[in-house]
Amino acid sequence: MSESWATDTYPAVPPDARFRQNLQAALEQTHRQQAAQRKLGAHGPDRRLLSLQRVAGLALLALALLLVARWWVDDDRRG
Image (cartoon, rainbow, N blue to C red; front, side, top):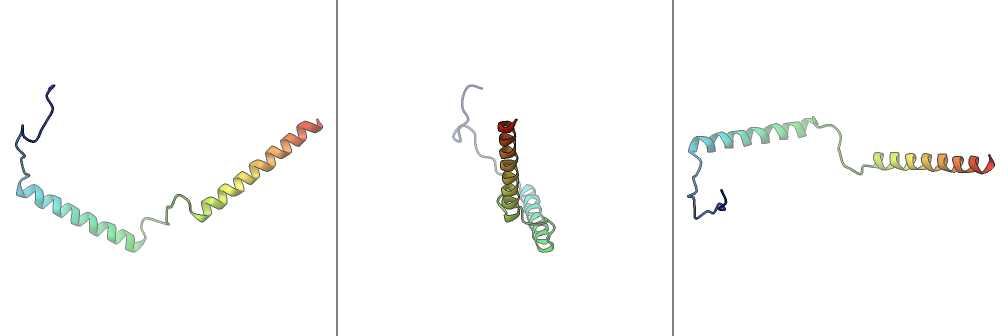
């Protein structure tokens, strides 16, 4: 198997008509299902990476960590 595969070495074999029909039917069914799910809102809320709620939550977490770190440093200086 050291020789590389090339299009001129092996003839292209097209899929048969039955495969194409099954593929087309599956694609149409998937498209209909996804459209229905979008219409019904079945996917839930928007799952963006940087939504406003996530940014606000991360900001609050960062603030809390900074306050704890400051308290810890101040406590070490006193003690």
